[in-house]
Length: 351
Image (cartoon, rainbow, N blue to C red; front, top):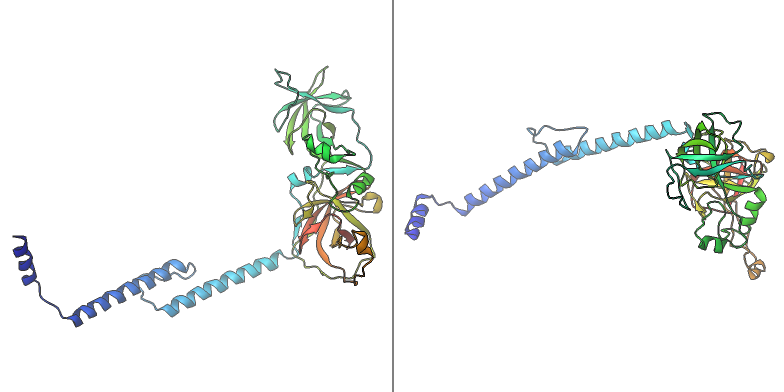
């Protein structure tokens, strides 16, 4: 029965020649190609959408795509030209507040973090963060409610820093080993390093201690952190996008050295902070621009290298930095431009 039904259907359907079948296949192929072209033009070219009802060729789609690309490139070039020379802040407020510093003299220890609220179990190690309440002990008699303090933590200059590192105490400024010859000696010569821990505002004074609330924290705040009166650090501005001469002649102005970074990094890049061994006593002030000069520390590190002859090469500038704020013998700077990695021990020259 099934075979008879199929034979009946085949008898009722007209037979077509191979030429007719080829023509119909070609017509369907052309229709699919036109639909694909219209979809590409209407979907892929956002600046010049072509209605699907228009049947355009491949050349028009390519021309529209090139025109869109040229408009985008032109807008990008216009924005880049507008940004060049525009005054921009050199740092973010959080980066500036958590930069750390090297003080020329030890800070007073008359006010410090004694304890914090909610210490029912009297834990030996406690960490506080933003929003927590802490107790300040010391010379707080003349402190009024609402006074804001900067919380800092002195770093320990250990004779054997490697063993200090094994105990779990990580210093942010003093490296366990010198990344450049004499780095630890340069830091000790510049003063006493301190890490920024955060800020706290006094909300209540009691006979036992002053109660303060942490308004900002760079990390965990610990017992024993020192409290000094808060002084804002204004963020200077610089002209962004201004090119500098990579092989400029050596400057005869103020010169110094990069002696460290807040995270003990051996290499720096654009946007990183650095410490230099120049301070307000040398005439450094916030907003000054310094050229970073590459120092070839590969010669001579070893005795036999000092016996070899190396030809003189031009001075290579690897970036620029802007002074963020200064201490008496040191300064904190922000790298605003770099052409390659910047290493601890590279020189700086006032522009």
